[in-house]
Image 1 (cartoon, rainbow, N blue to C red):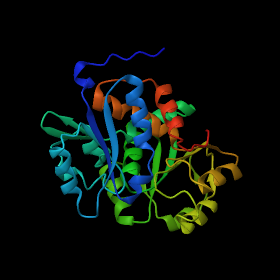
Image 2 (spheres, rainbow, N blue to C red; image 1 turned 180 degrees about the vertical axis):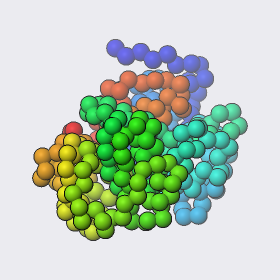
Image 3 (spheres, rainbow, N blue to C red; image 1 turned 90 degrees about the vertical axis):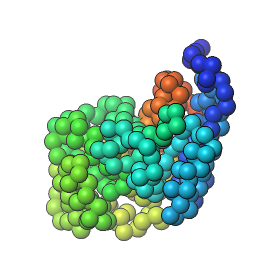
Image 4 (cartoon, rainbow, N blue to C red; image 1 turned 135 degrees about the vertical axis):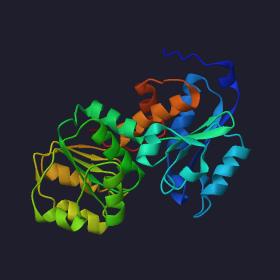
Length: 290
């Protein structure tokens, strides 16, 4: 039976939130983080906190007033939240994106656990990106984290693409990789070993234009396609991988690994991977097995 040492301080009720736009009410995070807290014996609540456009500063101020122990930050506020925090971890500073806030006394410190989650997912599936070529779709916080960690572990080359050329160039200039316009992707055979979707789009009804582009990709030497989203119907990343005989992995493993790191930052308790996966299953997080 699992046993986790819990300090007296952790026995007091704690408050955790996840900040996002209206999509925050669709996340399963409250269910699985609550299940993890119950499993390890920590008293607390985890709730969605919808933030209206232009009100992220007000939201952070309310977190301070409510004495919240920690919070997750999701789309579209991972970058917008930074000016209102007291301190950033080294990773969050380099990546320029925060998905985890930790209260340290009277201060709020921002972290990015997306990069660690992504590397954990690659380890789970047995893929070593060192010396490999990668194509990354996306220009937001998740994409920045992916490019950062791939550069850190010495991927051979990293192509970055997105709808906004300015944002794509920003990632490349600040973190690394090589920018490539989406319109140029289907004009040549792409010799990449890994394709990563770090956008929020995975189904045709979320973005038909991207779905059509992905279906036309000409890939050479590709070993793995990873979609950082999960539970999406008619996932065109998965369909593309299947049509080419390439392994596919959705975002559950990455999410589980980043949740472990986030929980450790909040509580000091390092939960076992199976504890997180079990909690996610109880929360009915939809998943396609790798």
